[in-house]
Length: 117
Image 1 (cartoon, rainbow, N blue to C red):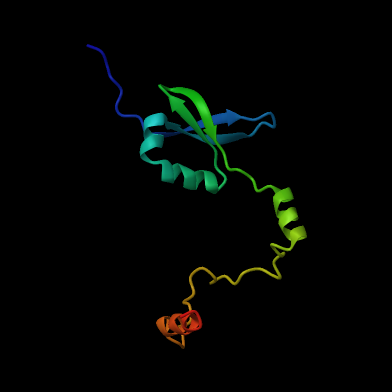
Image 2: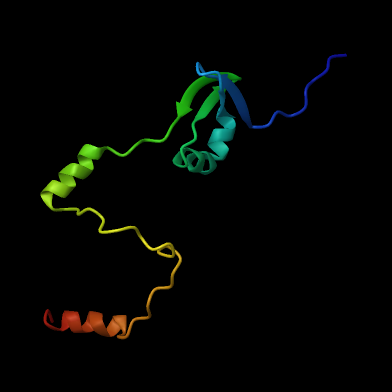
């Protein structure tokens, strides 16, 4: 009678000993789990984590965050299509409520179209 191990977690942590003597951990994911939970792994990568993809237990690829290209931003700034920030965004920028419109959007649209009729 052979012993079959229980289900393995789909995300494992590999301990990678560094040259400096301290270790760092890297997340791994099986190909099938990556296919089923791609959004989850993309969120991890967006936060700066790396994920090694395993095919039948063997590493085959690594997902890492793409860093912004400074030259692209520099060219947008030079061309006038972008401008540098004047200061940090307020902490509630993404959660604050937008002001209610004082004029009907439908009325504004109809007024805008009047000169074209």
